[in-house]
Amino acid sequence: MPQAPTIAQILAVPGLDASISVGLALNGERVAWGECILPSGNSLTQDAVLATLKQTVIPALQGQPLTDFRALTEKVETLTEEVTVSQPAPPPPPDTRVQNPSRRNLFSGKLWLPPETPPTEDVIVERIIHPAIRYGVSQALLAAVSIARNVTMAEVLAKEYKLRLSKTTIPIHVELNETNAIHIASLLPAASLGYTTPGDDIEAELGANGEILQRAIRNLQKRLTTAARDSNFPTIHVNARGGLGKLYDNVGKILGAIFGLTKASSPCSMRIEDPVHREDRQTHIEAMFEVKDYLRMRRMATPLVAGAWINSPDDVLAFAEAGAAGMIRLNMPRLGSLHRSIEAALICKKRDIAILLDAGPAESAYAAQVACHTALTLQPALLSGASLPLLHNEMARTLAWVSQTVPAK
Image (cartoon, rainbow, N blue to C red; front, side, top):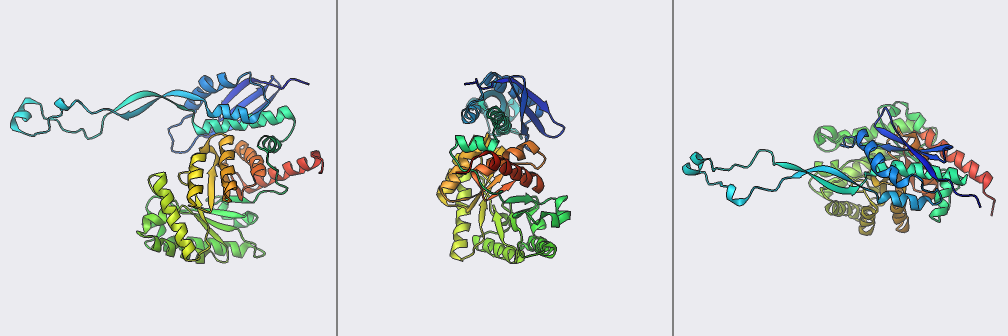
């Protein structure tokens, strides 16, 4: 039996955008690529990613045999590094904190006033490497194992996780932006179109009674129904980013706003993501459950989607056990390695919760390609990521090839 290829070399290539490409060379022959997508507005830099790859990832993976994707990606999930972080400094000893503003203390210099900015100190901590790095490295590992076995990435996942491949392409969710919204007719083949609300000045951007948001959804619905040749319209997916909860002070008014958005969307169907947002996971789950429960009591069929506070399989389990949403958005770069996305998806599937599998920013072609193969294995309700043609075509090509290479049973 021939010996399995090993990881002979690991390459790290900074991109012009906020990304680092990771390449795994198989015995000096072929290279499998993945992409670490740096989150926007985050302190993670290309230099920091390169340092982590050099100091932590390369020593752990170089020379490893490409026999078992699951074992390799689980290994990546355990990799830790030492980093310097700032944290609040401990308060000064009590005997120096003289706060009595007497004349004696004032003239003796003993008067202590709290600083305007709390003091901080730098400390070294050990933590698991950033989710974006784990995500990119696991993409490359999956591609490398598929090359080593001479099968598709979808077939690798199906075998290792004992799952069945889909026989058809997965319905696609497309996030609207200023560019693709201009050509709305080209998006009609999508199953779902995402409209994300602005999140800065809630009342100015949504309207005091949500009328600005309703108008925007009604305009989108009119453009879709005018451009369509039949009544098979995409679902309008409103990501409220907690805006309705900030706009209204009670769940009854939030339900009224959701009802108004449902009417504005008709004849298109509508779902809503994160109508409320809270400052910690538990209170957010409770608030989402309250909205979902009120929707049930009022016999409103608008699906509720959870996107905030979904950062790990444990988070998914907490939402699932609470029954806080009918669909969960799994943001793959935020969860970490592909193994974590698969774990989270299997939790949803076991509890019959719909999945929106989100590959992350549309600019990452490698991430989108891997997400297509993952989706064909997990069969989520929706797949989101790169452009509509890129996602559809990659899935269609994979299914065409698998149908030719896998014997019919």
